[in-house]
Picture (cartoon, rainbow, N blue to C red):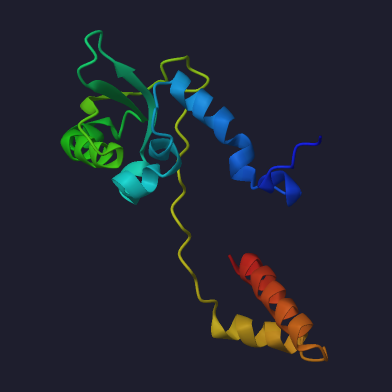
Amino acid sequence: MKQPRSSHKARGFSRAATLVQTRIRKASEGRGFAQTRLLTHWSEIVGEDIAGTAHPVNVSYAKGGMGATLTLLTTGAMAPMIEMQKEQIREKVNACYGYRAISRVRITQTAPTGFAEGRVAFQQAPKAARTPDPAIRAEAAKVAQDIASDDLRLALEVLATNVLTKHKS
């Protein structure tokens, strides 16, 4: 007698998150992260300003098992700023765990596994929107005025504005 197929196989498709969930959990537990949410939702837990400058790299437990140490990776310039916010970070992370799992926060400028993984990705500041000179915009509109398609005309105006602005500077 044949076994009935399980409901998730009967549909034919599975969510990508469920397919990789066990592998992600195994990899994160290897670094001490019992809560993968700490890694996946880091910016929501500690805030965008801290998440942009520091990343969790390890959670290590003491021999007695009383409280863990969270290791954060940051750059040399930001280390003093993160150092001053260690207590707030610890409280936010413990709120994520639901209990006082983290007793200490340690700051490092290299990953515990080596220099290759110890690089912090710097986020570029958003570019300030510049409004082009009205004369340049008028010249760009004149270049694209004979185009019948609105979408194509607008695209050509933007292109002409960019080109003319580059030439002026």
